[in-house]
Length: 184
Image (cartoon, rainbow, N blue to C red; front, side, top):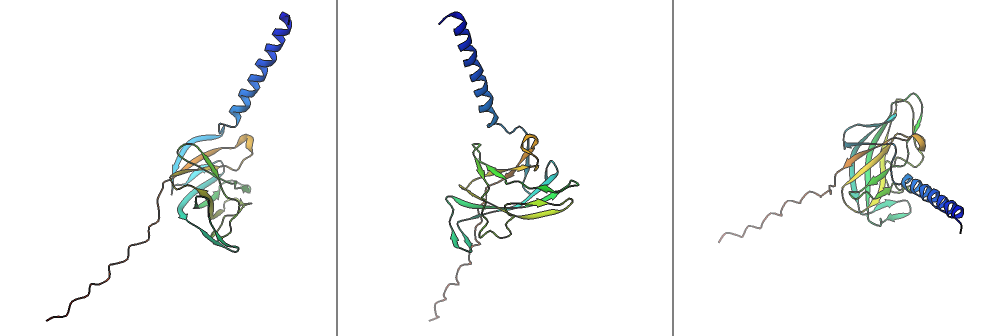
């Protein structure tokens, strides 16, 4: 190859590497992530939506119309209320959980057996509150719920809500009364 051809080849390689670098970084960051972490029970405002995570509940199975649903890991129900603070209707997107290592878990899109399931296609009217349960299939542990302002992908804003790990334990039964031996 002559000098001009090498220069041309290196130019194409450099351009291809630059495009690959830009594309690989595009899926790794949440450009609209505010970095803000809210605590469960507190109102978490993102864009026109205000989320309040009210409770979490772990389940080993769900009883649905088609029988018992068994998770791959465990079911986590997240009870929340979403308030629309804007003048127009806003769609509530599907949400994700993030574990301590940064792995994300998508909300399940089938609510069979979920009490007060928030639904798959959901929107909230201006100045209204919509509440219900989200469903995830995740290994037991603490998570952060990534909430979204419901905007378009290009201008989306997100934040996190801390969901501490707690296991619901059934109350202990009182001990049975001891038999008193008869007096002699």
